[in-house]
Image (tube, rainbow, N blue to C red):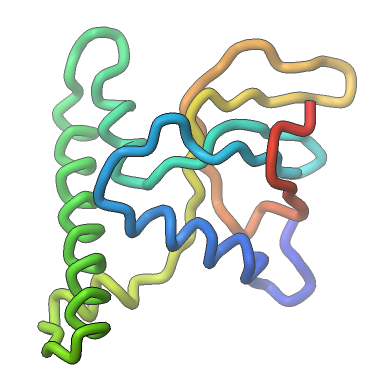
Length: 144
């Protein structure tokens, strides 16, 4: 369900964007609970590149697509991180760094996510990726 403004919650978007700019893996991730199309999704917020890296390692094999995506997204995260450092110290930011820094955050990535419906508490944990625009509410922590 889209918000009436047609854009995601700006506070959550900023929170996710900051997480995506981290250059080190997080463990544990930041606990969040989200409302998505009437379902409750709870899990640990992790950077986008880390999510792709963890997906690539599922089932004890490396998936070339997800490994490649993890490397690409990690490179973009590194470029954005270095752009912030340069900007803060008065350095000159390259076009690639600027582009990576200004890329809009459109997705949120959770580890150990559980999807709860009105009649069932989710007990199976998974890696979950969702569009920020589809989130109608959220709270820090695990609401279950």
